[in-house]
Figure 1: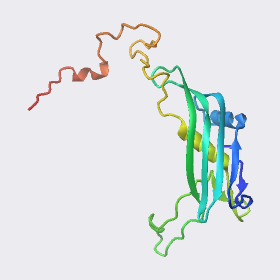
Figure 2: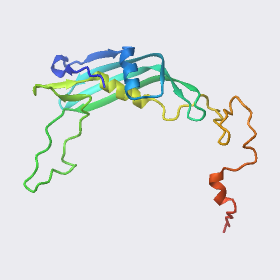
Figure 3: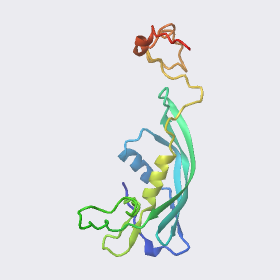
Figure 4: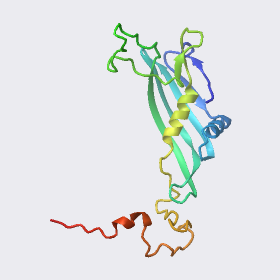
Length: 192
């Protein structure tokens, strides 16, 4: 993943804003993660960063339009993105010490996990660095639909011949049951 680390000490107490609109960045990550999508309209992320006492608050918005394969027919599904987000990342800390018993403290007492791709201790060991681009990528990934559809009434593909039932008439499935359910054909349910 592309890294754009910013020292937290360079961000004023009132916060700072970042615009991630470089399409080479977005396309590079789509390629790196082998996502089956095409960027139709430019993707832009606006990320505001607010340093807090125990971590960093990120607020922002992702906008753009992508083409994804339809979950039913594999045709193009155009998806408009306009998602807002609020994300708090606690400061990273050293691992909790091992007690004399050889056990680490319980999860209840352990500090909250940090996302190392978004916030980390600086390489020289002094200070904290943040990566607004990594957070924008995570939020972009979360904004994508799990089951994109080309239309609400998409008929999908025929399970027998594979034709697209949105564009072709298919009669091979008429009167045929799904062979995977054939063991249930003689099932009789008696109601009490």
